[in-house]
Length: 324
Image (cartoon, rainbow, N blue to C red; front, side, top):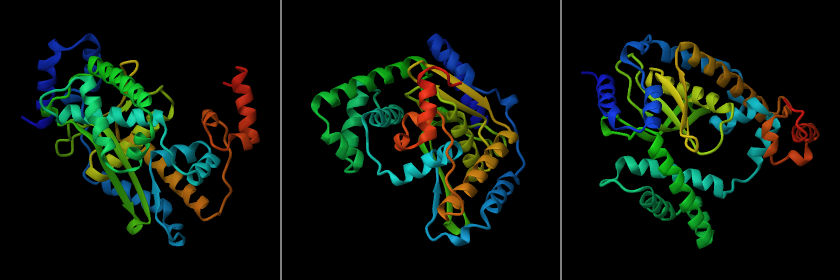
């Protein structure tokens, strides 16, 4: 029995013990074996060559490597002025980001810690682990008051319990992984695409897709979430050689999942988006072009919104309800 068939069998045997919400989620993220796509062995190399070709004329002029993640792609494909503002702005931890980090750590620990912990116990374990890491997030957590940390514990425990109530329990036989890194190096390291997948389930069988990429969202749904997952599908294909079977955004507050089936067109579309963005980012780095201003919903949190006339105009329209 192949590993993908084993996952399906294990999933099926657990159906009767699931809540209705868990069953609904499971039905959407489980792709039957006869519906999984088999790809050509040459796909990985074709995509890699196409991605390198898009930037071949520009990389010789840069001194420092260009690192590209979903954040850079989303910014430059939205508003290039926002991208440049983010590059210039020093990173600072904030409480909403901290909640998300702790939640993801809790999901990771829930897979690997035995015996099983309650939601509150996992939050305490995660918070203790993160405060002992000695990094920037640990420093930020130590600056918080006891009340602020208690509020974070409460918020994350509630989110985690909702996740446990609505997402099917993760079994070892499914091969779940958390924070799975993927990196694609082009032009001897001058351009690097990178990502880290929140959660994966299953794995490919030779050239047949079998892995499901799941992003766990602790906030509201926004359009670029699907673009982010398609970018991850491209990274997976370039590293492993086989695209994922499904892409899933799981919105924890609502206990709902949005799923997209992956095919070669999905991956090639993501390739075009990534290629165009890389070329544009290199033009901006080399100052061959000026950053384009494209007002959109990002204006609400853009660090230079107060200095941007088009952004202010968009916000005024949005606030009076006339924006689309």
